[in-house]
Image (tube, rainbow, N blue to C red; front, top):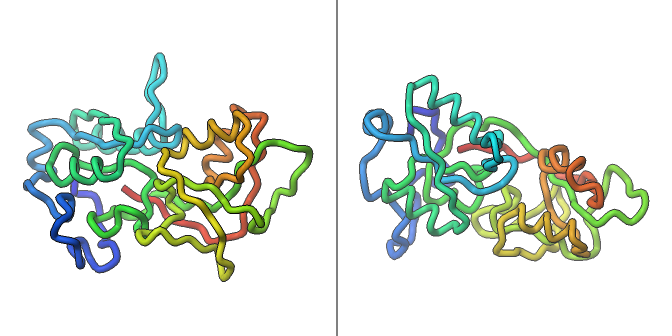
Length: 223
């Protein structure tokens, strides 16, 4: 996979996969040698931390890291915007994309179907809430259910989440993380699970949103 250092997900890259899933295994052979004669096609989740087109530049940490990889190996690089997980996996297995950039964790939604690089950073959980006066910087799990995106790296492949020894009630929304954060900024009342990386990036852009740390373990992100 692009000659990047790989580690296998739970149960290995193949694992026990449902045969009926069209994205359960690769349908083509396409690796760095083939990509050198073509283009490195990155399946991107539209998000400020992954890939965000702007008038004079394209930003996003994950995109910038892959641009560096492409320059090092003298590859042309292209972003392909995808907002559906099944479509993203199928495009990867069909060779229509070469690598997924979606703030993935090695235990997350894509884990049963793909291999992963070594982690490039670690993130910690936090909450985004409408600002209603001063809030503490540290925050324990709220009594209200936490809203979270199905793309969240804090959600495992079985759609479970826990922070330390305390189970947290949550509701999964089939929306990309940035859409949920914008809904919070426009008056959403349910606490939204975000990463500390998102909090750091968005704190100045969204002054009406209060970001607080949530007690819990860090999660490694990879491609």
